[in-house]
Length: 361
Ligand SMILES: *Cc1c(COP(=O)(O)O)cnc(C)c1O
Image (cartoon, rainbow, N blue to C red; front, top):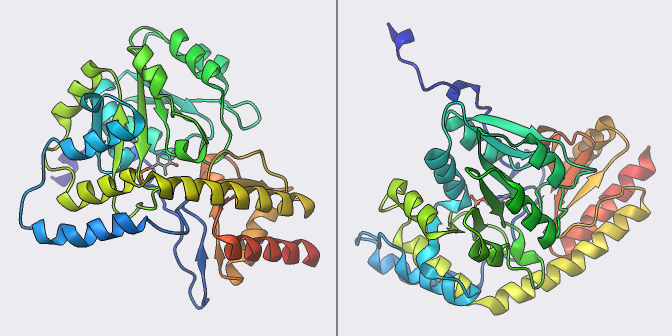
């Protein structure tokens, strides 16, 4: 009677997450611009730490991540006791949903928000609530209007993925202040390092009791394959999350490489500058070809085409040219292609290929 073996309600309604494509059959010299990875990879110091870590691989890792949290705290000026580390920031998002949302509770996020918010909410049995954006920008008033007594979590990414847009610190604070008393605002800062002088919302976390910030080593640090992220929040919330965190969720390799990476802020500064330069160049080049995009604050641009058909045709052509970008119809943006900012050669190839595509029509 296998039909008596059933998962918890909501689980079978989860649509499987599809990652960015990584290769194209029969095409050589492929550039992957579909997952917002750092085209230069991680810093040399992180790679050296990876090599060293192999000598300790027979040892169980630290369960409290003290050394990594210390490095994060010192680098960002944060209380290391209120930092929690996870298997990517995905795991922190998962902990938040598991700990704070369940059946009959609501988890709010925006129309073009990151797909993991929906997946983690549904995995916890909670009800996902999607709120419209205003011209691809987070709409604080619309979010506040969607909140009620059942709202437990509100997720926004700032800058947002896949739109690249950002709202001001004052708007974020207005959102935090306006939430119902039982709700937590989660500020996903996956792209915070790409914004010069931005703290990802850390100061707001310190000022309030209802805000948690998540961060990742997957984007500017170039460590998407390593799987390390972290969260920063009020002591009471971090304490709750630590109770459901597996004691050995991060290997010594993950902890040591991430620590070396966060201590190498010169590398972060160089990557931020290079990204900003090429992002500006690519956005301008595409605009001249009749492909506009919103001003992006992250390491990608969302190129907008005249129709879903044109976006799809352009994606198909780019693939024949060995360029993998991200279709974003699952983010309700069928007219768009999200293009990660690669190195200069990759950006030139993208502009050239989109120019050819536009010329062929
Ligand atoms: C890439 C990304 C993350 C990072 O996920 P990890 O699990 O840390 O790799 C989180 N949020 C958003 C919005 C992202 O785009």
